[in-house]
Amino acid sequence: MSDKPHITVAAVVVEAGRFLVVEEEADGRVVYNQPAGHLDPGETLQQAVVRETLEETAYHFRPQALVGIYRWHSPVNDVTYVRVCFSGDCLSQEAGRTLDSGIRRSLWLSRDELSALGDQLRSPMVLRCIDDYRAGKSSPLSLITELA
Image (cartoon, rainbow, N blue to C red; front, side, top):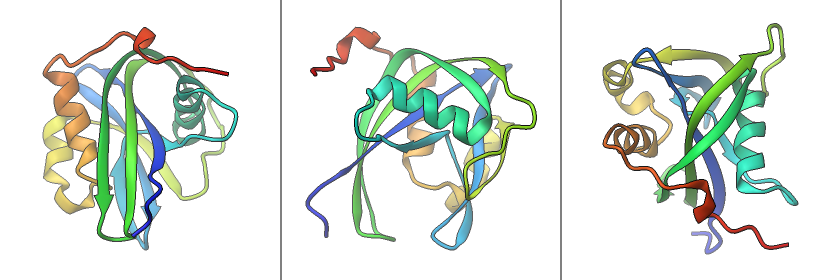
């Protein structure tokens, strides 16, 4: 087991009762996830979630709140993840933009459609983030302090 957690970010975006998700290939299978990914060196958490959402969906994301911070240990790859999940909206989409390697497509699914996917969800964090968002869990972005 790795002692060092992987820091990731994720975006919860909802329109007309449907959530923005990606269909991707991971660990040899097709799974569904929020737009999400690793924090790169030198970027803030908010910059990371904006970048990851654009790279995976071609949508320009504007974070508006912090949904929560989640820790999960994957039994598949023996890695612990710390996910910082943001909610917000999409400003526009870049038509024709090439998506990140491994991303098959972005799509909009209801909470029930996501739940029906069962073990095709990339991790239990997918539904937990959505359920926390739906329950009104929201903190201001000012909760995050970035020190240089």
